[in-house]
Length: 307
Ligand code: MG
Image 1 (cartoon, rainbow, N blue to C red):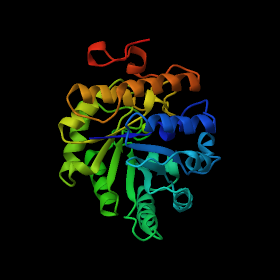
Image 2: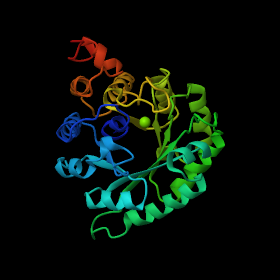
Image 3: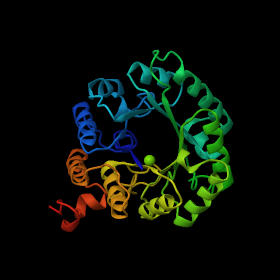
């Protein structure tokens, strides 16, 4: 199974207090030392849109590119893709929403327009690659797959149709986002059932927010149904911009504890990861919502306990 660590991007972009460039580089290095094999480092959006990530180029230049780790960059459009390629990335993540209302509000495009852009980006990502290098990895985030803050419920069939469209455009994986932390286990079952009629679930990742405390339950349901890729953010970093004070992405260490507890190896050193989450809480200036960072792991499951 795969855990995609999105804290340095999805987490930091939603934090009120940003990290310094030095601290961002340190965060990525610390995460790499936990055994995580996929890290989303930053976003190449317009700096004025997300000031927290305006040092994307510098962070990208300074991190060590370790073998065996996939470093992801979020790219909103052709310009962002060009910047990410110039910064040395070979794994690119695009984003759009399953609901028209959220897509319009977030990127000022219709869903159909976003699909056209997704196609252009998939083509441009492969163009000009040095000979000998395989094709780049591509993933697409499909936000509001479990509900839209403006339009309410999103039909599972619509999510399935869009996920299939993105795969057909060349995306290796579609990450279904529970953008506002709305999903319950039954809705996860319904969405995955719809998706499974069109796609192998090896093409699907799940991106849960713990806003209403359902993330671990939802992840477990996804795992039982065959999904093997989950996005998470160290410490549970990153609030939800639509729900002030709400929890952010599910904490990576909480998911690791869950999966290790059911015998699904993640390759992540939980004690090291908890240490990173605690360090990070000191940097962002508030306690992070992670359960494991607060409670620690039980002594008979390993070395870490609450400090
Ligand atoms: Mg998120």
